[in-house]
Image (cartoon, rainbow, N blue to C red; front, side, top):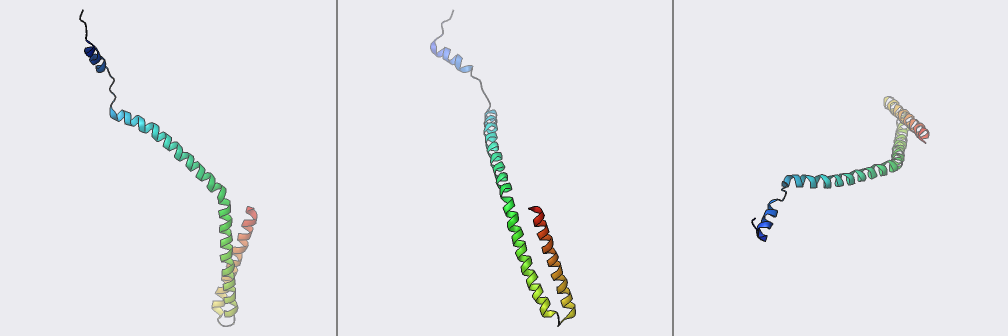
Length: 118
C-alpha cells in the first residue's frame, strides 16, 4: 500500500471540483435579479394607475370647467357680433346667429351631461 503525501491528497481533492460555465451563473443571477426588479416595476406601475384613477375625477371636472369657460366666452363674442351685424349684413348675421345657436345647444348638452354624471 502506497502512502500518499499530504500534497498529493490535496491535489486529488482539488481535481474533483465541479465546474459550472460562466454563462449559466450569469443567467441564474440575472433571472433572480431581473424578477426582483420586474416585481418592483409592476408594483410601481400599480401605484401609478391607482393614483391616476383617484385623480381622474378631478381632472375631468377641471376639463369640463375649462370647456364651459371657452364656450361661454365664444357665446358672448358671437352674440355681440350678431347684435352688431344684425342690421348691416343679412347673410353674415344669419351665419353668426346659427353659430350662436350651435354654441348654446353645446352648452345645454354639456350641462345635461354633467348633471347625469354627478
